[in-house]
Image (cartoon, rainbow, N blue to C red; front, side, top):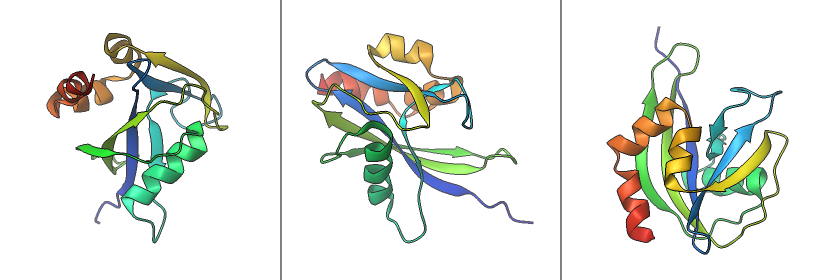
Length: 139
């Protein structure tokens, strides 16, 4: 039997004024409760990945996505959660975040703090795709 993957988009949101990354903490009532992550989620039927990125970021943070840049593709083959995630770099100047029910906290953090908060899978994707070097160049 073939595995059915979900496809989604994640935003690595960088505040160009603060020179910090946004990280969100999952709600206790949601999947992966208590984990720190990037804004984003599943693509809906008939939606492009870019439209999914814009919708998810708006819903979860209140940030309107105008500029974004492809960074990486991540694949998870676990039976319980198979997915393809496309990671995008999203610059913003907005500082005040409007959280959805999916998250209970947000922080603007340095790259070092970010890597301490997020889980091993995200750190792995960042390192394998040279995301940190991209962010440092943007800085």
